[in-house]
Length: 259
Ligand SMILES: Nc1ncnc2c1ncn2[C@@H]1O[C@H](COP(=O)(O)OP(=O)(O)OP(=O)(O)O)[C@@H](O)[C@H]1O
Ligand SMILES: [Mg+2]
Image (cartoon, rainbow, N blue to C red; front, side, top):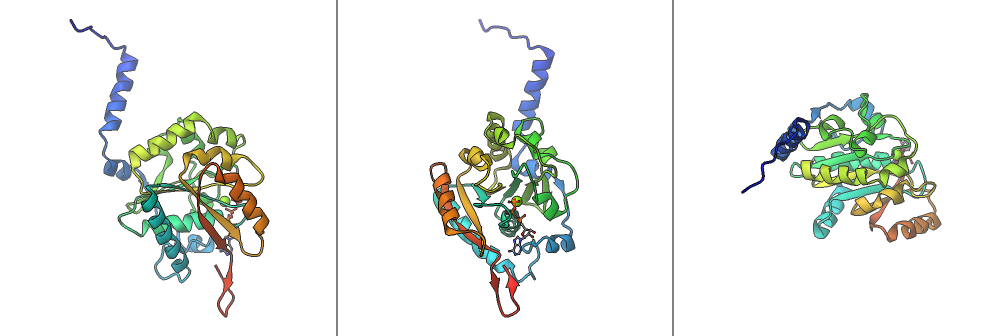
């Protein structure tokens, strides 16, 4: 005879929530994210060039996009970390541009996650004013819906606006791991771009690397030395796959244009 199970009201309620969540389709998960508009002038000022087709510097990011997609497809990878040997190499600018360039491929579902929790920059680049702290999501205290905003149909962004301390502890926590699994389950992204801090100087990057598939290193032209790049390669080699190195802030052309 089957045992009779009487659920307590609280447990019953939470089971219902789980059941409701599991039947929400991926399309509905995306549709449920708040749709936001980009402030074009502000974005251009912050060097976001991949949202508008007329921007000449977009071509470099489109080439990078195609190489990244090819490599992810071949290896069945999804999650790409953007980091650099030292601060201020342009990681956040590269991460945001790569995400918008990828999102121009209609078949690509893209997630951009600012995990430079000490000094988040993506929010400022995109002009996102509201407080939707990514750390709450990593702690398991906020849902995807209340953490991410959506640009168009296929780009979801989580970008906190205030720095926190003890970021390395959070980045290597079980709750952060669970949040990343939930992100993949619910949004089924083709690519997740994770903007991280620099490798040298803190353990934030090492802390989060077990959650990602591969890494793009951003080097600042004229500032990042080969010795530092090699040092970083050694640091991350045991934890992840190195997708490549992006040389940023290069001068080119007769007018001395930057990119
Ligand atoms: N290609 C570029 N040409 C000129 N300036 C750039 C370029 N890329 C980024 N910058 C500028 O360099 C500064 C640092 O950029 P960004 O915030 O992207 O660096 P970061 O590596 O993410 O820094 P952090 O280590 O603090 O996270 C910003 O002022 C940005 O506008
Ligand atoms: Mg940054």
